[in-house]
Image 1 (cartoon, one colour):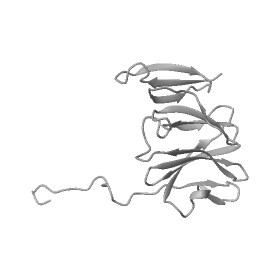
Image 2 (tube, helix red, strand yellow):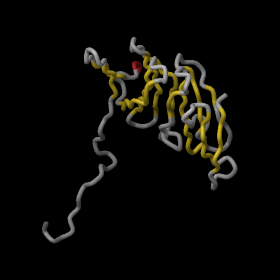
Image 3 (cartoon, helix red, strand yellow):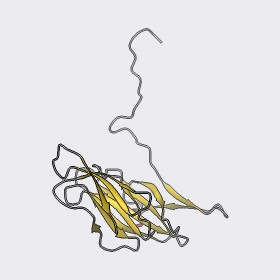
Image 4 (cartoon, one colour):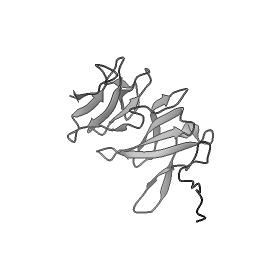
Length: 178
């Protein structure tokens, strides 16, 4: 301590080397580790792989693979125990992925349906897609955004914060999944 004002680097700056994230599945009995990657991006783009969770049935794991330029992300289902992988959703934004539902994803209680947030229409909305893949289904749509989505503990209802009435206001809704 010199008695003068000294600069301390507390946070990284734009352009600094960032930490990378990886996800792995570990067989408890054998200790065998399998790293999860997005097959079609292997070796072509740097990406972070983040584990989201296991399906309620235990048949699948869900991960999000995000390119380090934050222009692309993939929601990937990993079948257990075969470790087969498939991309069930591709998110893309020429500018930057993020927004209100930027990292929203998980499982519905049937264990065979994935939910996620996307701004593919220019507005943040909630979608579902089968774990086996297929065409995503929009649960919400319109010229407004879902700002937050929470699945109820019973798995039958989404609680939503939206700006549907006015962009300057936030309203609370319950979306029944039945």
